[in-house]
Image (cartoon, rainbow over all chains, first blue to last red):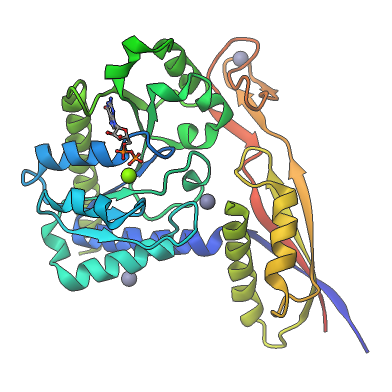
Length: 236
Length: 116
Ligand SMILES: Nc1nc2c(ncn2[C@@H]2O[C@H](COP(=O)(O)OP(=O)(O)O)[C@@H](O)[C@H]2O)c(=O)[nH]1
Ligand SMILES: [Mg+2]
Ligand SMILES: [Zn+2]
Ligand SMILES: [Zn+2]
Ligand SMILES: [Zn+2]
């Protein structure tokens, strides 16, 4: 005889990804590492920003990069010039990084290096404005980039990433004078859905605003390290 | 598109549950709630589910998707409102930013219909 029954799950569709993200974050916490998930549409300037960041902050901070947005191995090589570990993730045809891919990367990283010597892991996500925001990878904060060439309406049309971002970099500011772009409108559109995000205007080309970005990283690392220390002393 | 990955995530989650069941029931239907303020397109999810479940433990199972609208709560006005996706998220009455999303972010497996 056949019997039918209902099982109530009440479980998030991304439960498995979430558990993986928590696993990764636990590693970072145990190693005293702050992890930032850097997201944007393709070509908004993530790799260029990471290059400036490595040039300025390494070795002040000990940094590793998880590179998920490679068109070629050249992108990873661009970053390796700064003498930091660059863990390249093969995302296949996936349009975002998920926590399992990143877990593979950090396990490799912990095998090849001494992770507790590191302060900061920068994850360059796959270029996509939509779903990377939905798939946590174990980050402590989300950084979104929007270049001035993308148009003021993008935060309204693709709100998820902007709503979740802790820091938003409006990039390629050197191009703004050549365009009919109203940067105040970009800010107003983002503020409609995210009143707490730190917004910084930058140009990787001229260096405009980068100091404010570096300061944001420094204070985020300090705050995160403090949280991690308190958690350890609470356990001991 | 990312619905392929979403479906993979969904199948993984359902498989975890299924493998924890001693009798490994036959799954007839998976009920989801998908909010409007997520990156999931229900039609694409349906299609991806059909394709990816063939010849798996979910072969023949169907997917029922309940969509929920984006609803926010304005603390200044003490009132719920419906932001217009793609156009306006701030409170239409007082322009306060959308802070408190009451519905629309769901990506949930509600229940599973099984046969034994
Ligand atoms: N003018 C200008 N171009 C930039 C800036 N940042 C990046 N670019 C250019 O934009 C293109 C894409 O940059 P890339 O860093 O590869 O973007 P990604 O796909 O987000 O990693 C490259 O041609 C960069 O040289 C900037 O601040 N100003
Ligand atoms: Mg890149
Ligand atoms: Zn691990
Ligand atoms: Zn995706
Ligand atoms: Zn209001």
